Length: 461
Image (cartoon, rainbow, N blue to C red; front, side, top):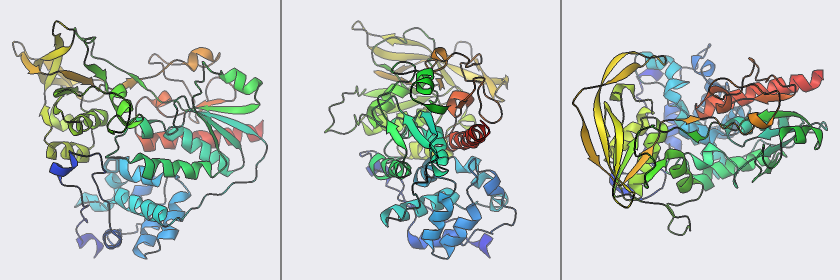
């Protein structure tokens, strides 16, 4: 019976209205809609969805509680494995993980696991339901560097079993990419992220902001002078990559990191904010990942016409299908199989055009995707007064370069073993600083794995 019920759609803001504001696009499920969608779950004995979740949330169990309208118990089940369900329910690529493994998806549409997770988290927040409490401390101090998804997960798992955990964050607000990288219309900061951070702090975790480990203090100083017995490095991979084409230093050319950080962390989109931001009349975004789509949709809401230039076809777009669909609904133009070769500028040094070439796809490259090959005599121009480069990120060497014994690979990523332990005794790492740019939930899985390894290390030591 369950597999005959169609997937319950999610209500959203009208595209013509939502491009004029930064309010959340999706309204989420109502109680009735959530229970109806939960009835589609087959409650498999060997749930493939759970195996595909990087933090192993007990998915059929919490969905069954939603079906019974026992939302408190559903939240309790989720909280055993995640303190960020309102975040993950919104931004995780469920279609490639839990929902991608749902048995219903083989012949139809999978259960909307992410939307149900969001519903439970939002309902619990609105009804002041919490399942976090301080553990009895064991007197052992652990430092966590970085307050993004991997750092928060590692910290909470350790705090739950009695460690005194302090998180060191370089920016003035905690949350990492959740705060500075994901737009307000996808992930509300005050109502969602900051509330989830309150749950983290309720475990007794200390968060010290404006601390740049490697400059303000080193890892060696934390361990030798301040008594931390283990350290987890979860600083992400926040340095932008650029195209390496002529004209990239012109005024009006931004990295997506800077553009999104100004908008999200410093609220440049808010008229009451004193953070300035340049709003181009026609913005050209280079790239096809989630960050590119986020940048494009943010620029659109600031009043710009937006064109996305991507060197492969729509089929190869790495961004989430849902976000691409939203971008199209909102009127963003996509130039597929195109690549910039030069940025042009005016006499005042501002960008005023992008010279592109058309692309054909050749043989697969090392990533498994077909390599882009320029087509001869195919140049064309895009008139623009702002360019946002969203071609991925690379690691920052500030921690590794100031910590003797840490080993990095050719891309600057910290080398760890299968449990997240580095070559340096007592120092562990996880998330994007190890894997390169990845998803929120994968970073959380890395943090969870490292927390177990840190606990074993300290018990044996």
